[in-house]
Amino acid sequence: MKTISILGSTGSIGTQTLEVVRANEDFRVSALAAGSNVDLLEAQVREFKPAVACAFSEEAALDLRSRVADLPVHVVGGMEGLIEAAVEPTADTVLTAVVGMVGIRPTMAAIQEGKDIALANKETLVTAGHLIIPLAEENGVHILPVDSEHSAIFQCLEGNRENRISRILLTASGGPFRGRKREELAGVQVEDALKHPNWSMGRKITIDSATMVNKGLEVMEARWLFGVELDQIEVVVQPQSVIHSMVEFEDGAVIAQLGTPDMKLPIQYALTWPKRRFLSGKRLDFRSLSGLTFETPDPENFPGLALAMKAARAGGSLPTVFNAANEWAVARFLDRRLSYFGITDCIQAAMEAHKMQNSPDVPAILEAEKETRDFLECHF
Ligand code: NDP
Ligand code: MG
Image 1 (tube, rainbow, N blue to C red):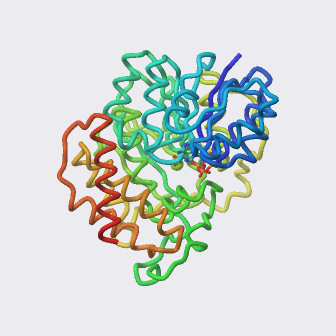
Image 2 (spheres, rainbow, N blue to C red):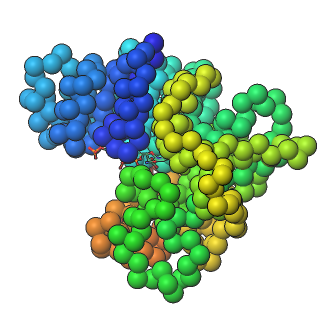
Image 3 (cartoon, protein in one colour):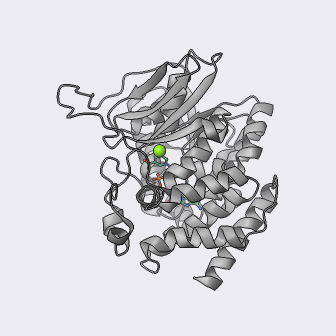
């Protein structure tokens, strides 16, 4: 029996996780948490019967409480509620699929309760990896990656834990704007940026893929998950999204994980690890593959990746500023109140204005986030 709490259950990863739960008879759901989508959350509560349900928005929590009054579910709201969902006692694993660094506190609370983390919520590791990784070690919990590239790397490392990694080859699709030059990108609209060529995902990460900020966040995520130096992580553009990432060992051998672009595989693997199970869906057909191609990233036309590397190298509170500025700017872009290049302009300006702090604790991380948002409200 596997008992799972899902934070972000109404989103792209959350709903696919529930599909995986439906297909596995021995999986149970102990808690569900979302932001404000009460209609879907109510339907999920009725189907999966968790002990705890959280709507982050207090108004939505009130609404949900009256809607499910006929069920024995404890309905909670706000950050306290999200933490309550994360520490629900019967869960052995918490799948974190909220979007943004709002995941920091519930993730840490779950680790302190000894729960394994199936981690999709990369922003949490980017901003607080220096706290989360040691906390997980201290509490003897596993952090199992759900992000497809990191799941691929994790799979390549199975059976190779004792061997020295020489490089991690983190693949990127290049997003909808791959190959375009700055002048061609200046006027792109929300609709253009939301058309990802290979993956169907939530809106924020789809924009992050269009700017290549996502790959920058993933470099930082990989560094924490696999304990490697930044110089050992190389981003390789693989436009077909067939190779999900690779690891090169010290003898020069490269091990890769391949598959169709389906997030249910990394989600299920994080929940069944170290075992694999049957998963329905398309299989790779090598006879119909037109080819596998590789390119190097283009930092000139996609400054998001270069800014991420700068934040990653500096460390301390700078990754938080990078991430918080991006979260703020992407929300504005989605609201059509900021241009496409406005996103990376915001990140750059916020990073330049910030006074770096080494090894920030949680209050300092949240303070750096607030400072970043206040700065951008004033200047953009
Ligand atoms: P979505 O936007 O589709 O879903 C986000 C989920 O988080 C929703 O359930 C949303 O609830 C919930 N949520 C938002 N804010 C809060 C809050 N304050 N408290 C509680 N719940 C909240 O995002 P994705 O599923 O695409 O992405 C989730 C995470 O996984 C991100 O960190 C992303 O980078 C990562 N990821 C996603 C991939 C994908 O394929 N989608 C691939 C790899 C990583 P509501 O619906 O009520 O707003
Ligand atoms: Mg990814």
